[in-house]
Length: 233
Image (spheres, rainbow, N blue to C red):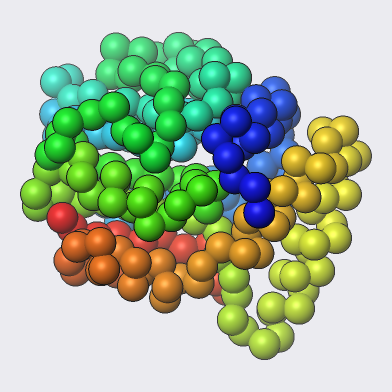
């Protein structure tokens, strides 16, 4: 699949205006509970420096900012300037502008020095990188030793009863909803394919270990439709 940065940026620039609405419709609101459950499992260091990669429209960036002390800061980083424009307005409305910086760029080449951040998160973005292994190495590089990476990502159910319905939903229903509600079936076809073709939750855990992360653990949601992975540098 073509995951060139220019193509991925174009897709998400086009989706930005309807992205939040469509996420709620497609996931039946469950993406919010996945993020909340993941947040509950993170020990967020007070007054820390946090990097939220693939920040999108800013939901996780804002949630992290609300947990920080007055000296902490969150950098929301995303490829799409249009997604960040939506995030910027949401950050302002949430009253956390003082704690948040939004930066546009390519996650394959993060513009930060080694050992910079106390926590790195990436939500629903790892599957869009053209080279997952290299992207994981970048996330590892910018973390301080002893600090945590948290990956929240769609996954594939392995329950033999649930799996056929999951495939039918993502291959048929989701793209059609994209056509009806967002008038953009092609972009939602892309999202379906990246979800279906992304590595399993066990393969992602193995990749984190191979990159150098220790005490790797994961938490699965909705029969395996999504998973949160945790690892320490």
